[in-house]
Each structure stands twice: as structure tokens, then as C-alpha cells.
Image (cartoon, rainbow, N blue to C red):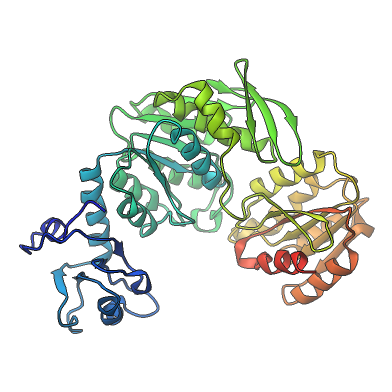
Length: 449
């Protein structure tokens, strides 16, 4: 990290004459190492209570805002009013010193996969750093910035949100050179009221976009159109059948997708035509920043997905499992089911679907709508959770009625037992649901059967 204690203190007008280079900036005292800066944040317990542990682990300095708790002896103290805002302010100062090109990505789903694709493409020409894991909120974005190596030329930031206004804060912090929205779905509709509300919240990513910046958006999302006249930056749209940048799917298989853009062939090492849209963002951004077509092809062909995003794993008996269990909303679940049912697979095709959370008062209707993505190509459908009762009732009136097995929220052990008893080595199953449903336990149990 190319930042000293003196520079960090100067951000807050504190004259600390210590030129020791900081090893890192952390808000988790367990991750502190020698010469780190500790940022105590409020959580289940006040982070100030862990300052001694941070000091013992090697922290040289700490931000401090607590009026009554005394900081440990022997640690340099930088007084601030609000440690969260100070953390973000520190990230802004470090970003300005590094001066990388910044790419910001958001969307109801696909943003993590898109981030991974963009990183793989940009890394063909630049030193890159990207959001790690799901660090995409008011704490994760500044943490990502502060963890960027000093040789970073392009910084790729994923931006998430639960409520309106959150992405605007992140965008103004990052001041991206380019920004992209993957799609508008239903994630967090409980908090935002409607897809229109979600679109407005996602468009906040342009709030801090530089005046000479670049913006990419899906061509098939009319909910974003009302906001476009307010932008002065160049805009490129993308899609499978419309847009400035169009992808034409040539072939989909279990472990790759081949598509063309204006006659140039690209290959993705993942399932799903819906991933082509994500790849179009990577192509558009790569070209904008001067990456050649050949280099873009190379990057996309070998990009690595973040764990639990459309990941193939193998059950203990040899059955193939398509695990997509990080999160779920109707758009994402429908896309995964559509791709899975089109695959040329041997043996039975099985779906394991769990509740999609935070969908608000229309949750039952949205779960019912998944029936449109289930046809007779599925030999069995396992449904798990309270919200999935709506889909169970819908399927009970369909030709799939005798293929459905339902399990209540407290019946996860029974779900696992039934899957183990049913699963044959030649089967293929897709597992999809919100992270809060704990489907990783199901996947791990099948891997160990």
C-alpha cells in the first residue's frame, strides 16, 4: 500500500509526523498485521472495543470517534467524527493518489460475473484489481479501493445496494471513468417498491461518472430510458437482438457458450446465453480502453467465475450439479432454468429451487411465474421454503404435478435425504435460491454422499 501514517492523518487535518508506510487498512481486527491502520466500526459490538486486539496484532494507528472509550496505549490515534465517513474519505484520498482508471458495475444480477469478465479482459493490457467476494457496499467499496496494490492501473468496482441512495454515495466516492448496468430485475424490490424504483436506484451509478466518462446499458430495458437524456457522457447499448453492441449465440453446452459480435467469434467457459450480455459489457469496456479484439477474446476464454455463481460441481455418486446459490430473483432464476433445460444432457434433468427472498407483497406471484420456465424436460422438481408453496400450488395444476416434491423451511434434512435417495449417477440437477436459504448445505451434502 503506497500510503504512510502521516498521509492518512493529513486527510483529517491531523499533524502526525510518522512516515511509516501502512501495510493495510482494515476494519476487522483479526486481519490486522504489522503497521496496519485500524478502523473501528459499529456492529453487533462497537469496533472501538477491539482496538487493543488490533494493537496486539500489529496496528500502528487507529481512527477514533468514541467519546468515552480510551484508545490503547502505544498506538497513534487519528480523531474523526464518524469512522464510516472517515473510512470512505480515506479511500477517496488513496484513490486520488493511485489515480487508476475506475470501472463501476451494478445491476440486479450478473454484476459479479460481469466484474470477473471485465477484469479478465482489462488484465490483458493493464494491471488490474477488482472487488473481492461481495464487498460491494458502503464498507466494501472503500475497502476494495484501500486494498488496491500501488501498481493498479484499472480498478473494477462492483456496486450493490438495498435501498435508494446507496449507489449514489458509492459512485460519488469512486468517480468512475466508465460505468455499466447489467440488467434491471426484482432484487430488493421489497425495499424499492417497483422495478421502476430499482431502475432509478441503479442509475445512481452515473451520479459520480466523470464528465468525459463512458456508460453502458442494456438496450432492452425501457425503464432506464427516462434517465438517459440527463446524461452528457457517451452511451453504448448492448443486447442479443438490439443495441449498439449485439451478440449472436452460436452454441451453448454444459461448460461453454460460443457467440459472435459483428463476425468475431468469442468463447465463454461457462453455461448460459444470458452470460453473453455480461460479456458484451466486457467487450464494450475493453474496446473503450484500447484492448484489442484478440486480447478480449483471450480474456473471456479464460476468465474465472467467483464461487457459487453458476458453478458445476460433482455429487459423490457422479451426478452433475449446477450450483447457483449465491442469490436469486425471478429474472435470474428464470434465465438459469431456461439455459439448463436447453442443454443436451444424458440422464434425468432435476431442478432444486428454494425461496427467493425480499420480493415484497408480490412474492407469491413472482414464485408462481417460475412455472413458465419448467416444462416436461424436467423429470423431477424439488421445491424448498415457505415462498415456494405458491409455485407448488401452480405446478399442481400442470402436467408436472406428479414430478414435484415440496419441503417446508424446517425440512432441509428431509430435502437432503430425499435428494440422496433419489439421485442417480447419470442425473443432472440445477440448484437455485437465495443465499439466506442455506443451499450450500445441500450442495455440500450431495458432494459428500
